[in-house]
Amino acid sequence: MEFKELGLAEELLRAIAEEGYVEPTPIQAKAIPLVLLGKDLMGAAQTGTGKTASFTLPLLHRMKAHANTSASPARHPIRALILTPTRELAVQVWESVRTYSKHLPLRSTVVYGGVDIQPQIQDLRAGVEILVATPGRLLDHVQQKTLQLGQVEFLVLDEADRMLDMGFIPDIKRILALLPARRQSLLFSATFSEDIRRLADDFMREPIMVEVARRNSVTETVTHALYRVPELRKRELLARLVLDRDLKQVLVFVRTRLGANRLANQLVRDGIDATAIHSNRTQAERTDALQAFKDGKVRVLVATDVAARGLDIDSLPCVINFELPHVPEDYVHRIGRTGRAGQSGEAISLVAPPEQELLERIEKLLKATIEERVLAGFDGEARPSAGRPPRDGGRDGSRDTSRDAGRDAAREGRREGARSDTPRPPREGTSAARPPRPAPRREEDPFFSKPYEAGTPSDKPERPAPAVSAVRGAAARPVAALFRPPVTGPKR
Ligand code: AMP
Image (cartoon, rainbow, N blue to C red; front, side, top):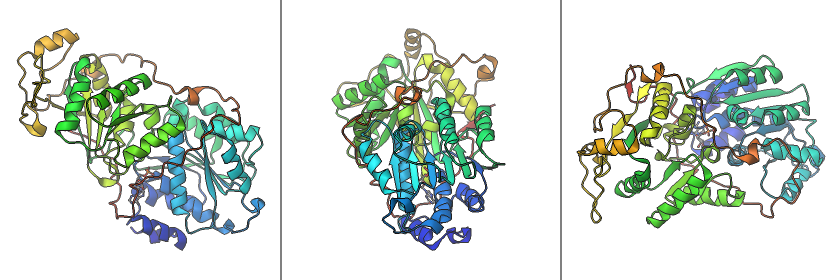
């Protein structure tokens, strides 16, 4: 199918062609005609499927009738409101809005917390048709009466599952109460829990469900591998993987903000350019870190789940789970950063013995066994020699040279299965038989999870330049690969 068959305005088709997109991705092919018809829609699609364009393009098409070049703010009321859970996602969605609307006289802006509210007020005063916002800052503006939502015709809730996780639902409900009842509502979510469906029932009119990904499935273009390693040697193994394999752009996930800072600092001491992105850093620091990573100035970006949500980095070749997530669905979100738009990607997990149960839960969710690899020197007590690193054998330079693996395991407490460069045989029913342990508390970004509090107009003096992707180019890209299980061998 070609974009022009979707009946989109010529200005939009031109912008799409300039981006190098050849054909719509499946979510776009399914969602765009329905949104053009004015239907409410629930889209089951993860970041990486092209979902942003699937709602942005038809909304811009529908708003084209209102597009005008008048200088009067009154001629530019907010007609489309797009809510996102994080600042990074808000900026990325806004970038897409600007990209696709560049040939139409429609105005847009983005508002999010953690930065000075004044420049946002000025943008809003000038009048914008499309507003991308995080819920808390939007409510700040509502309280300060710096915007009007009475003419909103289109509402989008992006990454609704994450909004729910972050405790945003009360804020969302407050915002919904301020919108006209007659409007078109779209909701996108990677997963559809009962809570999401209940939320949708509250504010949507006979929504049509559009799915392109099976729940919690992963892209087939991503290969998954794991290395078993004692906790204390993870950093060393990570540095080895980055240096030996000459990885140029790696997103590394940890569970805590403190852990992110510590790891980034240690990597820098190891001679690897690294920086951390997490919610305790200022917005300017986060934006700078992301930009440096996208520009290739920083090789390793260490991120927490909250901060990395929705990051759109084209062609990211490798994601490393330095620590496994407590919630298995987060594994799917994490590895969604790689293997995007049809390109191949690699997801590597460093698994310490105490993480065995987390691994089993992830494999159960994926319905697949993740291939286990061994790197010489990390297979027991033997440490890599100080000078030249030992030569690795086997696939991916990996082989099992372990003689002392048992001692290692004893020291770490618990270990299942022998290390080998061949995939582990599937464990039979281990994860199913064991009752799941209640998930430990996840890292929370207090900025997002605290109940709404009116912000002060002078939160912070800076307003960073939006993180414009340097690599979002005009080169033709393959159509986004779609989500299909399984990953490696089927799990019996
Ligand atoms: P999203 O799921 O909206 O975060 O989009 C993921 C990536 O796919 C973004 O980098 C988009 O620029 C890209 N993309 C969106 N639509 C298409 C398309 N039709 N063909 C190729 N790439 C696309």
